[in-house]
Image 1 (cartoon, rainbow, N blue to C red):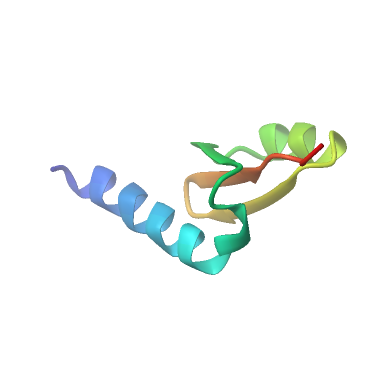
Image 2: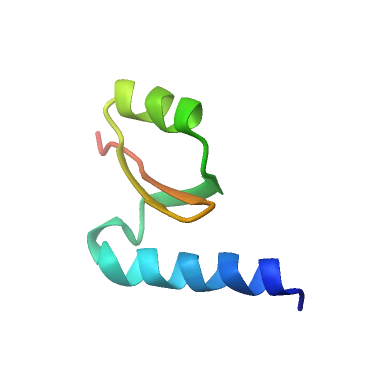
Amino acid sequence: MKKGEQAILEAIVRLTETVPHCERHMFIVPANPATRQIFDRKGHETHVDGKVLLVCRKSG
């Protein structure tokens, strides 16, 4: 595994441990301010760790 891939996996683990309430309703995308803004505007909860953006889908 490459160094960059390892860093991304570690970020995913940290995020999932930080926001366990998102466990069943989340997805991971590359971190990007514009992408985060789009999800925030739609009412989704977002969390960033380095190059990883975790999005909690809005329930309902």
